[in-house]
Length: 101
Image (cartoon, rainbow, N blue to C red; front, side, top):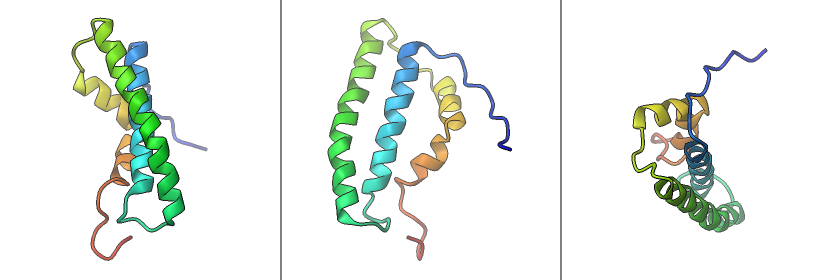
């Protein structure tokens, strides 16, 4: 049985969209990371998809700005990222420790 996750903090719909698009882009960057093992075709496909995800991320931020949500609430958004496994997902973008990869 999976452990109970803490609830997501209250987010506007636009903030939720921003978090979702950000994590999708992070996942793709993790697949493209040249310091990680894998084949070039997988990296190529991820890089191609990243272009679309970057545009969706831009659109999510633009929508927030247009709606008057001009400030990112870092503490709240960081809590949401942690609940959605953002730390593990973002770690795939970083260089692995020496001898791991």
